[in-house]
Length: 290
Image (cartoon, rainbow, N blue to C red):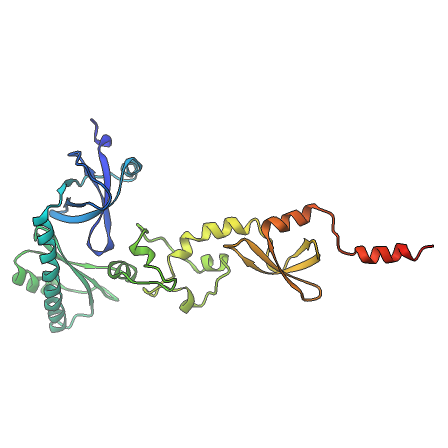
């Protein structure tokens, strides 16, 4: 069996981050199972979120070398819960040390590796921070490998999670695997307000959904007339005043100010059949002839 024949599984680790691992041992793994995996310089535990043939293509993107070591047992779960308590304690200690050294940084999260071989402190800062003395202090206290990792505000939102303005969990904590560039042009393409307060997420950056929803908007928009254009309806000519992308409905107004809502299919049918408007006038004109 070649390396590419091994099953690939996607595992969600702490902080809403995920990675891919090779199931070289052929363990009977299903979505929802907790597994112990190999990570850089140690072991960690996470939850399987994707598994199956469709994940074999991951090896074409980048080599998947980290392995699933075993399915988590009760001892692993107990250790995982103990580490959560230790993380809270380490957070308080680190915040005290940051204040003591007067460092311009904000501690976001703390993560213990399952086997205790490393503790990672995630932080945000407006600029580079010289935290060498802080690392020395923490290493002296915990007697293990210490890593301080600076992250961006989008990564902070992903790690902490929350509910967006749409009423659902953040996209970055549910299904987005990587952050994509988001621009104001994407908002304009979707006829959205470019006011920062309306199109920014909790992280303060433009909402991620502007990027992955844009393609749908652009595809539907091709089948609908533009706002301000003239369209032919069964009631006469009208001006497009609005478009409902999700319902694929065109809102138009006739010359008398009457508003109508027309589906894309109804609008297309109207373009293909003779107009019925103006009939009464034609009858009047022909009726005068004796």
